[in-house]
Image (cartoon, rainbow, N blue to C red; front, side, top):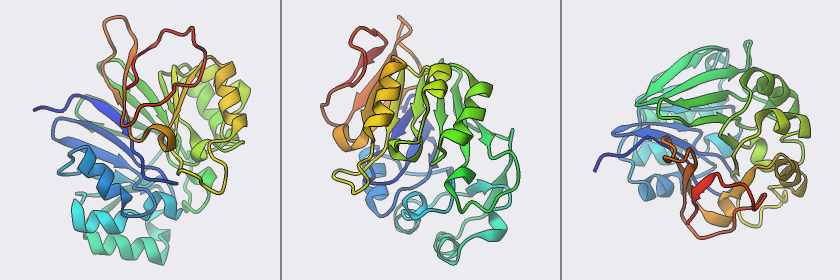
Length: 268
């Protein structure tokens, strides 16, 4: 069975792991905090990874590297410009266990995976990847229709600039697990995502996703889902004949947002 173009926000607890794939090609953006990423990849029947992109050096985004070393070794790892020479000892050790090369990507660079193009939108200058505002932010565009924005742990300051450059999108992976400062009303109004998705762990001590984030997105007429409620969230790269998004959730849940917006084809 050939895997269609799809983007999956995987349930890895209080962390991030986004799978962009088509056919036998797959790129993983971040790999969660622990070995839950291996379980998530097993659920999605992933046998190989062309690459892992680490958005920044926080352990809820790189902690799963150890599990990848024993489950499915990526062919390479991408980091932001300036990060390869400033990897923390822990990240460097985990990458050594995998035994794959590390390459840097810069603003404007594009990575291809099947029908997908991942374009680097942020950072726009050299960083060390140690802070949320250094997070790699990517625009994921599928030739079959879907446009998504993946924001790592970026928050309002970074997103304001990116939103003005990108404009309206279909899917937003909300920054910093849906924290209270993950998105402003102005940014939500510019992006107007049909669906916004947050990745957060059940009963996490931070209260993610925040009520403030969800309210901002609701006022922008965006649907909202979180992995802690519905598990893995997979969005097809090809929209329906009616132009809607085709969405599948691992567990049944409630799509939060305006009830009158007929833009999601299936949430089940």
